[in-house]
Image (spheres, rainbow over the protein chains, first blue to last red):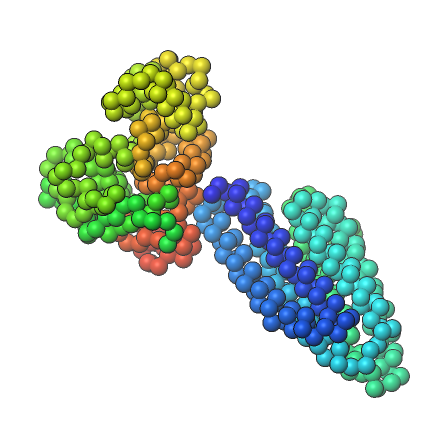
Length: 220
Length: 253
C-alpha cells in the first residue's frame, strides 16, 4: 500500500470511530429521555469497549505508518493529528459511558423536566460539535473548526445557567439533592465532550493555518 | 498467514568454496505478496535470492545443501529445466541491464527464445508487458530506438517489462533501485505494489525504509543466518529479536 493510501485508511478508521462516539451520545440521551434501560446498558457494555478497541487499533495503525513510511510534511502532520484525535475520542467515549451510567440511576427517580431542557440542548450542540470537528479535520476546513470553538462558549454558558438553577433548587429542597447531582454530572460530562471537540478543532486550525490558538481562545 | 506458499526453502546451506554463506535457512514465500530480504552487506540476502532461480549455478566452486520447493518440486533436482525455471522465476538486477538493442527487441527477445514466431502475438505481448511495467506511454513512439537511450529508471522498467513478457510466476528484485534517483525509485516501488496483484515478489534491498514501505513480509538475515521473519508491520514496530531491533535502529550493519 502506498503512504497516501495508508493515511487515507487512517482517516477512514478515525471517521468510523467518531461516528461510533456520536451515536453513543445520541443513544445515551435518548435512553435518558425515554427511560430506555437497554440502550443505556448497550452504551456501557458494548459501545464503550468497542471504542477502546478502536483506540488500540488506531494507535497501532499510526505506529505502523510512522515505522513503515516515515511520513514527512503533511503526511506526518496528519498522522500526529489522528493520534491526538484518537485519544480525544476515547476520552469522549468514557464521558458518554459516564452519562449512560448516571442516566441509569436518573431514570429510576422522579423526573426533573425543567432542568433537563438545558441538558438536552447541551447534548444537541455537543453532538454537532463532535461531528463538525471531525468534518473540519477531514476537509481541512479551518473556518468550520473556528465555528466549533465558538459553540463551546454556548455549551459553557448553558452549563453555568443550569448549574446555578439546580444548586438554587437544591438549597431550597434537600429532597432533590440526588437527582440534582446526577443532572449536574451529566452536564459536566457533556461539557467535557464539547471541550475535547474544541481540542480537535484547535489542532485542525494548527494543521491548516499553522496558527496556535490553544489556551488563548479569548483572543480569537 | 495470508495466501498460500509459493516457494518453500528447507534447511538451505550454501558455500562459496569452503566459506559458508547461508546457514540452515528455512523460509516460506507467500503467493502474491512482497517479501523483502534485509540485512547488512555479506549477510547472504543476495546469495539467497539468487538460489531461488538457480542463478548461483553460474558461479564456479559453489555448493548448495537443502531443498527449495517451487510448484511442488525441489528446484535442485536433476530433471529440473533451469531455463524454464528462470522464466517462471524472473529476475531484475541492481543495475538496469538492457540488451544493446531496440526497446521492442529487448522485450520480444524472451518470446522469441521461447519459440514464439507469430508477429502479432509478439507485438501484443510486447505492448502489454510495457504497459504493465508502466513504460508504454513513455516509449510508444520510439519502440525502435536503442534501449540504451532511455533514462536509468526507464531502463529498469524495461528490464521489468522484459521479465514480464515471458509470464513469470515470481519476480526476484535484487536491489532494483540502488542506482536510481528518488523519483524513479518511487515509480519502481509503485510498480512493484501494482505487480504483486499478479506475481509473487521477492526483493533484496539495502534500503530498510524501502522494505518497510513496499513489503508484506520481511526476512532479516545476519552472517548467513535467518534471524527473524514475519509480517513487515510487526518486524518494523515490535521485532521479536533484539538483533533485529538493533539493526533497524542503526546500531550495527
